[in-house]
Length: 243
Image (cartoon, rainbow, N blue to C red; front, side, top):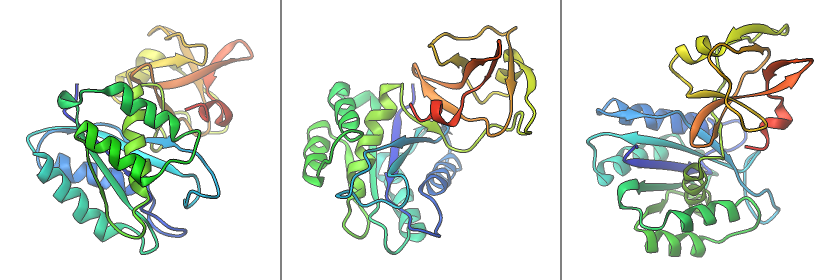
C-alpha cells in the first residue's frame, strides 16, 4: 500500500490549465525526488449553485510512496500550485499519511457526503484536525479544501474515480479486438471489469473504440466494459459517470 494520498481541488478557471494536469505535474515532481506515484483519479463532487467550480466540480487525487516527509511533499505541491493555479481559483490541498490514518470510515463518509450535499470549510477543517490530515488553502476563498479532503475519502473507498486521460488502445471509430492479457501487459491497469462487477479472464476478448477510459473499482485500476451485441466493449460515457 502507498504511504501517502495527495489531493487537490479548485485550481483552474475557464481557459487555464486544468486541475488534472496540475495534479499530474505535482505527481511527476514528487516521482523525480525518488519513489513511485500512481495514476491520477478524478472524483466528481456535488454540483450546486452554492459551490464555486469551473466546469465539473471534481477533485484530483494520486498516491505517492517514497522517502519525502509531509513537509517536503507539501512544499513541492504548494510551490507548484502557486505557480500554476489560475488567479481566480480557490485551491485546496490535502495530504494524508495512510499508515497513520485512524478512522478511514469517517474520511470516506465525508467524501460520499461531498457528492450529495453542500459542505463547508469548517466541516473540512474539523475533520482534518480530528484525523491528522494536512489540509491547506492556497488562494481565493480556499473553498478547494472541501473537495481536496473529499477526494481523499473517495479514493480510499476504492470504488470512485475515473483515471485522468485515456488509454492508448482502440481509439478509432471502428471497434478493435484485444485480449485482456494484452491490455494488462501494458502495465497500466490491474484488470478488466464488467459493469456487473465481474473480472474478465486473460483469454477474453474486448472490443475497444473511441475514448477508452479506466476507473477505480474494487480498489483496483480497471478498464470498465459492458456487453453489446454479444461481445465485451469499453463502457459508454454514461456508464463511466457512475464513477
